[in-house]
Amino acid sequence: MAARLKELKPLHEEYLKLERAKAALEGLDTPAKRGPGRPRGSASSGSGNGRRRRRRQGGTRAQQALAAVRQQPGVSVRELSEKLGVKHPNYMYRVMNELEGDGAVKKEGRGYVAA
Image 1 (cartoon, rainbow, N blue to C red):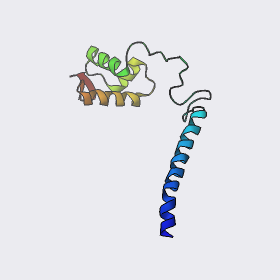
Image 2 (cartoon, helix red, strand yellow; image 1 turned 60 degrees about the vertical axis):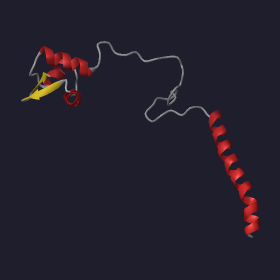
Image 3 (cartoon, rainbow, N blue to C red; image 1 turned 45 degrees about the vertical axis):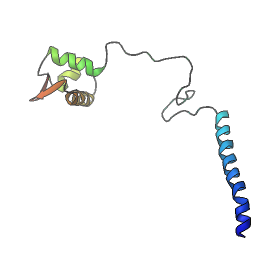
Image 4 (tube, helix red, strand yellow; image 1 turned 180 degrees about the vertical axis):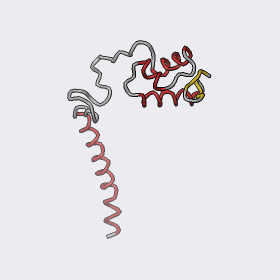
């Protein structure tokens, strides 16, 4: 029995290798799956349809918030969100925490000042 197992082992390894190669080749024929939350007709990544999303004008929220803090030192997060037109002030708390972590602003009382 041991001799037969020894004889069949290379064949079994070749079988597994061929199975993996077959599975890899079959994956090339299937269309790209769309990711969770993506609309129908969109591939998950690298769809290559030639379209690119345009970036918003005016920079990021962090840059806008930093400019507002420099313009009005001591401004609170709620005032910032109103000034920048952000509907959810909680988002601005996250932006300001990142700016504070980067050392761009520091908190003084309830407001922020540029560092």
